Length: 252
Image (cartoon, rainbow, N blue to C red):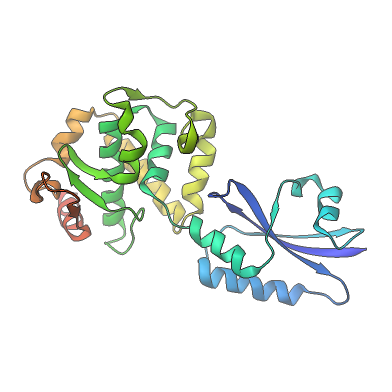
């Protein structure tokens, strides 16, 4: 019998679980597993979701693991620790679109309202971390109708003034549906400082979620707001984090 030491995680960008397998052929590889776990946490963060498993099979190949335990069927085996880390690190970073997809599993929005909520979630998290952490990596731009995240704009501009309901969509937007709320939430939880991010998004939606797009415009466009300090007629005017931080933290 062969003992397999397995490290399991998720690759949301791949849409599947990923694994490292260390078959124990001659001597125990338990210490090696400990060192690999330390390396992963050192490079990806101590809060990265990982699980370890030990299973005995009749062979050295990964297929023997799948045969022995159905839990591992469909798991993508990664050949190297460096590739495993690369996939995890990629998923530890959120985009504005990830946040928008989660919001849409909680409540239907027009595109205009969605942009405002994504921005306010970003501002709230920036304040919650004292400017030391960003909710997502996208820049915030000053567009004519307010602060905009480009990934969200590109994905949903085609809806115009129609309400985007939490229904199955096509292409890259297929995850913003009620039945996939767990997947969208897990995507955020998996990111760096994910629990804090999810808590901040929930608090922001509780505070602003029931307001209309027009009422949210009154918040984001008011005199002295970060958006009001930029020329929205110019292309690609980035709203700086320090302006968002100064205005929204003082407002709170």
